Image (cartoon, rainbow, N blue to C red; front, side, top):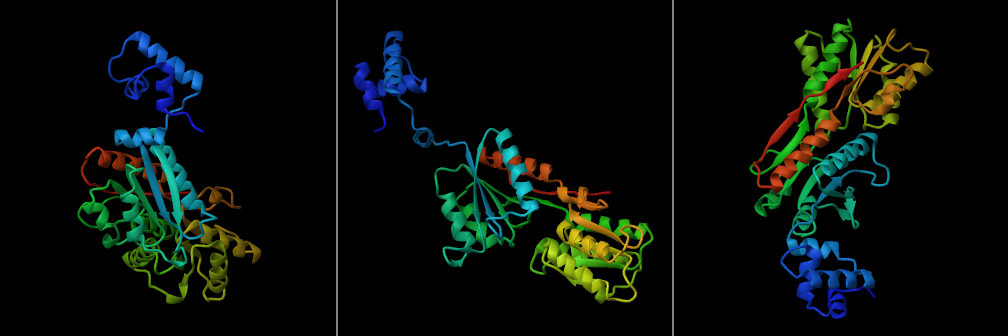
Length: 334
């Protein structure tokens, strides 16, 4: 049975209120009384309930990261790295971070993000909320957070609307840089392994691919665009299809690094020399592309900056700061 303040008070011969004053370091008591309380607490092995104390003070210094991501048991390299960066950034701001990952289905039913987020907002254990989602987030799903005046920030996605802070990455600009890089290398037969149509970032990268080709007067070839699902295997399957087309593309822009790696594997198995016979560029900047043979150019997302800015925005919001909408640039690395 745990020791309570009343037990300490009884042993020290004082009131529970006096014990509270001594242990919290607030208020004035005599040195003799303070000593008796501290000795009694030590003798009984009293440990304060940190959560209860935090609730009484109205401050827990705890932030929740709610991630709506597929495959809860196996986070992708991108999401895993982003969550690690967020954890580090939140810790530097002096807060604790708790993480809950919710998939497409929750308790057997399609997940209602609005209800899940509202329940979190009404949980007094958390001072703020970071929202990360594989699926698009709509304003209606976070409008209750705005009404409740609950501090939150959306990461890696833009949700327009009053009262919503977000930090996202310029996926369109980064993809344009990748395609322009290939064009400046002399390529005109450029294929694209696009991501799933329902994924907003995949669509932004696809749109950038189309716009950049048009900017340079390069005809669009429908057969050069193959849809994948951001997985390595879909990159392999897409590359198999591209290698059946005549004329063969001389370059491939993949909507993410996993598909780029899959495409590279197929090309090497067919005896095609990467960079000489065909160029491949990915997107994300995951660690794995540095160790492929040969290493692949990629559009690197600034995950460290993304986590840092998200943490700063949320802390500002907790302290009553203004709503901000920030888009970070990304860069191509060879």
